[in-house]
Length: 288
Image (tube, rainbow, N blue to C red; front, side, top):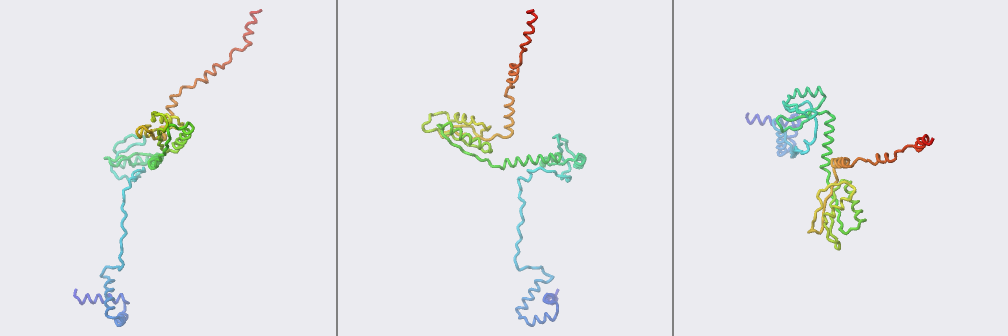
């Protein structure tokens, strides 16, 4: 294309942008200075249909959000629906029985017939492991998983208590009541028993264990009583029992307790003897 053709196209485009009429372009060219004409031509070139639209303002693109891997993404349980991504999968029944490797079409047929749902258990295995569950079972598993996550996320508070080996009995009872209250609130308790200035030398670890065993609240040891500070003190950490431990302890107590025979012995001792009148009736014929 020659230079004349290019010049004609640019001028024609400038006329269309500035008004579309020849008279308007002529008037504008008469009234404008040579420097202004160059600006008009430059703007016409900028907005010509043969060039890309350019904006004077600098545009900054918003950074894309990175899909960070959430470690808790796979910590939930849910049904995968009918769109099974794998062709063949290993299926576990509701009762935990291994049904073997099955085609996804057969699995979908079982889902429709029995009204069950499919849950992914392990995707890393070959073939991946899935389990058949009902909607109620999935809901129960979700509740259990939430309780476990809450238990892990909840911070454990550690309360501290220090007293001397020469403490009075009333003060010791008051402090042990405070420890019982902390344990009931699911807190850990660190107890330090230090040797008094004028108190006789004793086995502080044994004494501390005897003191904590007098409490009425069930507890466990995070660390059992041990001597610290070169024998000048003893320390232990107590924790509340879990629900499983409490149930086991209750069963052990029920099994160890002997049957109550007091009721049977009392009923035997209080059993009425023969009536007094009966002895007199048997003796009357002999007297006659």
